[in-house]
Amino acid sequence: MSTKNRFRLEVEERIESEDLPGLLKKAGELHGHHCSYLAYGVIAGLYGIKKLGITNTGMEEVVAIVETNNCFSDGVQMVTGCSFGNNALIYRDYGKTAVTIAKHDGQAIRLVLNPEFEDSREKEYPEALGLFDKLVRRGEQGSPGDYADLLTLFAKMSAKELNIPAEMMFWIREEKIEIPSFAPIFESVKCARCGENVMAL
Image 1 (cartoon, rainbow, N blue to C red):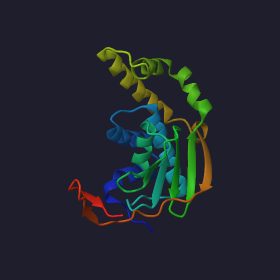
Image 2: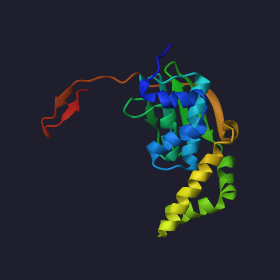
Image 3: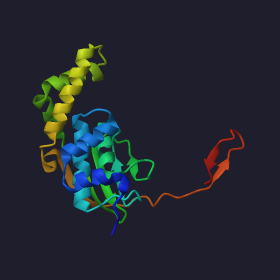
């Protein structure tokens, strides 16, 4: 039986009560703003953690393998507690809004954003995605009001997306996978060329 991580008490309480708005708020503190893909990461993270029955104590009992480096990954990271620093966040650059959340025994849940759902967002949020296309995709110069409007619209969009069931948003499947072993600990040695400490392999 795992003990509660005192550094994650607020997050774990929000997971237990399935408080998606509260988890999105915490993810925004990490990510710097609210947007739909951050919300998707929060939803995916909560779904995987609850389905696998995991409580993260910060000791590598859960691993998240993300397949994109967009906003989605920060939502996953906040909810699961998986990070590069605790050797539990693995990045595979496939360009897919997808995550596999796994226990160390290999029991895993893979969630991939459903392409039909993703494509339908443009019709649902034309103003927000129109501004995103202008300011971010095309890199056009906008007014300060444009950027403020984008953040406001994205925050509203992210809150609304929390009401959509994960099963409608994602393709979900249970898997059995091989995951990396626990992080090895190596002593540090001084590099003869640069004088900096480096792990001895």
